Image (cartoon, rainbow, N blue to C red; front, side):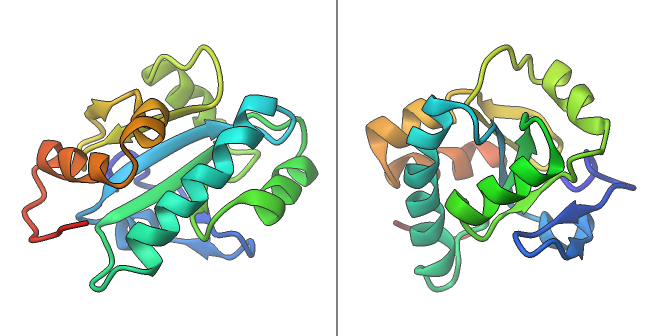
Length: 156
């Protein structure tokens, strides 16, 4: 997945830049296409936040999972407000990065919210991450991990 974002920067919730190669290496990555103005997005984001927190912040060792938010907000200010109000401690593609359009096209994003779970190569494990989290909770992560070809002893 680091390859997909090679040469780009990502930002964290505080606006600090991070190198994709460092933070996405050997992880299952959820590409979260969403926006603060979108009611279904605001409905799902707290569930995603809890899912992420349980997997990454409350599990030792942390699960090899990261989320990258791809914004469909109308302005950088809306994106920042949405991230601060509702998001977990995950990453985002900067608002003005035109690469978000390439990602939307590559992963066939026609509506939001959409959580596309991908391997290191950018290959899709599932484009139904939202549905799987709603229906299966944390147990869906084990399936993603198996699909990702990341060999790590992890249990939820």
